[in-house]
Length: 255
Image 1 (cartoon, rainbow, N blue to C red):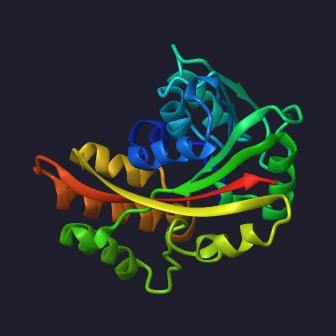
Image 2: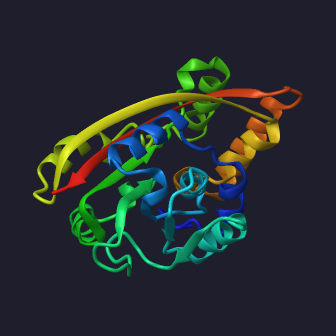
């Protein structure tokens, strides 16, 4: 398994990954500044369409999901029946979408995989004047639940030198405000965050771990198997595992 390649993980990703805080979604749509029913959106690096379907449920005029991975895209198509979502193969650097075709361009939990400069050029190309680009993540706040802290600590027990960081609370997110402000294509950069709590069954909680690419790459098959065994035993018999998620979003207007 390679970093960033979710082939083989898409089924677990589609079934068990959480959504994003609805209040942040409402704020992002408000920033666009158009009647929701008149918004044309493009969700890039859409994965299995978790965020895409949240947007579609708001009644946008149109929405295109662009995803490079065939497995993830197939899961997204299968999960999007009855919606207006159009799925296409493409990447953040080359979406294949027409110039000036979107009022809102988004990347949910995926901008850290892209070439930032090339992606910004591409998003500016497909955005209409005054359109909005948003990047968002939904990391867990494990410190809100001692059980989650205990399970997370088991990872370091198995591999003390592991580089265990959340893409939503480290890396590009530490400097994204400055990065967007430095781009001449964008203006009016805004940061938003909001929390929501999910109650997951043991099956859902363990299933979400099965979808994590970075952890499986770093641990390898045998240590990852041991981690899953520990986690399954630790949550067995629980009615629910309560997890607090922090949606962090950046929005910038096309100059």
